[in-house]
Each structure stands twice: as structure tokens, then as C-alpha cells.
Image (cartoon, protein in one colour):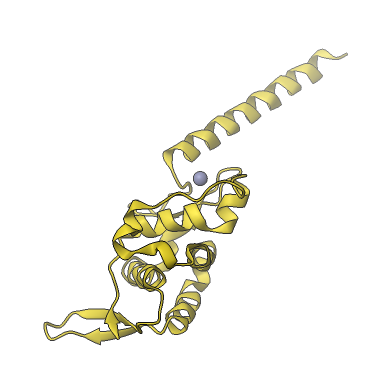
Length: 175
Ligand SMILES: [Zn+2]
């Protein structure tokens, strides 16, 4: 068994949003190229099936109520285990045969859910976006993956309200 690499949650979110099939399909980018993620470079991600990892983790974000079950299943599938180090810190371990990126991503997300709770995981509410996010807001009120999607949704709501107002005015004009 070897120590699992630490992957920051921002890198895990990037991996899911850039490589998961649902995020790419909904955004109309299914045929586009996959970007190289600098955050994965230290792990030597070349041989990893990043799409498979991203799809597994997207399913966790999409269903926070069952995040624990899904993550436990992923921990089992990748053969991850905890080891208590001499200085009292729990360390994730993996078999050498387990994919390095998959192990780091699963372990990292388990740690986030264990610390913050599964209801911090979410999927963007904006139209044509199912990107994932971790809600770090104090009041747990986040519903968009990015400020861009938040603005886009607000503009869309405003336009819809304008259209409704315009059509209501038109109806009033007709005798
Ligand atoms: Zn979004």
C-alpha cells in the first residue's frame, strides 16, 4: 500500500467539470477537446481514465443524499484504506495498482464530505449547466457553479419577467 496524494477540492471540482460526460453534454461541449489540468500534472495523470473518475464523482455531487453510499462504494472499488500514522494523523492508502488520480480524487472528496457534510455538494441551477460546486457559504445558499452562471440566471429571469410584462400589456391593449 502507498500513500494517496493530496488533491485540493478546487482541483477535484475542475476535474469533474472539465471531464464528466454530463457537464460536457449539457454545455454543448461533448465534442470539444479535453483541457490539460495543471493541478493534476504532479500526479502524472497521462495514463488515467479521467472521464471515468469525473463521471463517478459527478454522480456524488448530483445526489448529495446518497453521497456517503456512493463514496463508500468508490473507496471499496479503488481499495482505499485509512492508516493511523505514528503522529496520530489518519492517512489514506491505496494499492499500487489503483489509479493515482482516482484514488486522490475519491479520498479528497471523502475528506471534504466528512468535514463539511454532504449537503455542501451541489450542481449548478443555471440553464445548460450541470457543473458541480462545494458550497462554502455561511448560510449554505449557493446554487450556481460560478459568478458567471449566477449572473446569466439573473439576466434570464429578468428577461422572462420583461417578456411577461410586455405580453400582459399587449393583452390589455387588445379590446
Ligand atoms: Zn453553472
